Image (cartoon, rainbow, N blue to C red; front, side, top):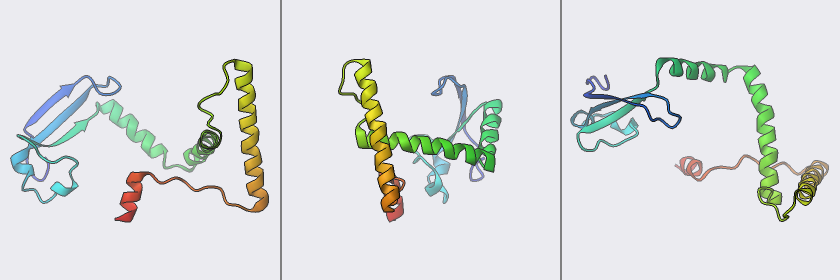
Amino acid sequence: MSGGHRSFEWWEQNHHRNSTPILKVFFSAEHCRPCPKQTSCTKVPSGRRGRGITFLPRERHEALEAVRQAQETDQWKDRYAIRAGVEGTISQAVRVTGLRRTRYRNLPTTRLGHVFAATAINIIRIDRWLTGTPLGGTRTSHLEALALAA
């Protein structure tokens, strides 16, 4: 039930992004259009269908919830902080040195280019540390910038 109304259509799909079977439930558009909670829905009612909800199979849903709960623990956050540091380094290497593309055709020269890129990043970090220049903050996506402006 959504807003006190029963759903009018249920169907199973076997072609979610990762081939997981999913269950879709739809509510009638005639009930969704006048609903005061419509602004919190993700899709405007069109045709005879109103709000749609997608459900994963029970075992997949429970596994997803278990992972979400594990993400709230300090142990998980400490482990993720290491990954975030590594990804930050990769991001810096790509932005500063253009590491995703190589200028060279053979493997030894490409490897040497990677060593120079790593050295450049280390020099930049040492310089920032010695001069007290703060590291760059987390970038803000265009969508997040719009949300912050509102």
